[in-house]
Length: 278
Image (tube, rainbow, N blue to C red):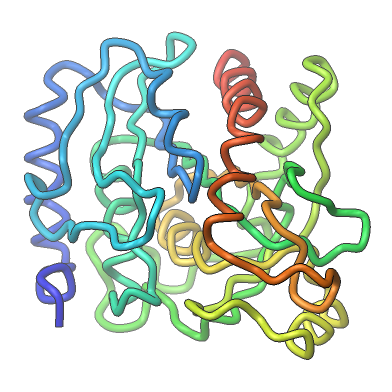
């Protein structure tokens, strides 16, 4: 059991929030942004940045996935107070779902009302070719784990409605920004699997049949936790590879990181455009 798993309860949320708030000073983040694999450079665009390493925050383990820095970055982006999570905690690293959701609960405790999640994903829809940006319309939880299981955490709704996990108004806003900025943007359903092995061709065929357009190993726990606290969510997938069985090319995490970097500029432009219109 990791240190994060031993201390992911409401007490840890409060202690972590206190540390972060103290470091941020007068900054009160309205929007939290979670960066996926290969997308860490977006954090460099934050102005007047305050960088808080995870090792200084109670309950935050060091991220184990390549391409994840392991720090929170507070500041402003397009004049909006933001807190950026550069490096997330994946279930495949052995973390409990509540550890993956811990930063989200800290963001809510600090007053953030909007969560922007990003990830690297494999393209399932036949028209998706890397690098492509996909606006997440909905998700399918095939991790079969949920951060809300167990005693109700302070501030959580016991049975949150998940009819619109990704806020319709924010999705409309993102589409408008993409049209205005001429950023190619697809929209689809994200399937979250446990990992860390990539999917088999048979699993991809199953995902096609149940309506998934992209597949990855993150995002779902954070969004569930955010919705339980009334935080609006907006999600983007960077399609960094074609899913198994749809291309003769073998999959590798290095390929994911490189493709993520190719689309990072467009993603930053898209996020900036959304922030300007909030």
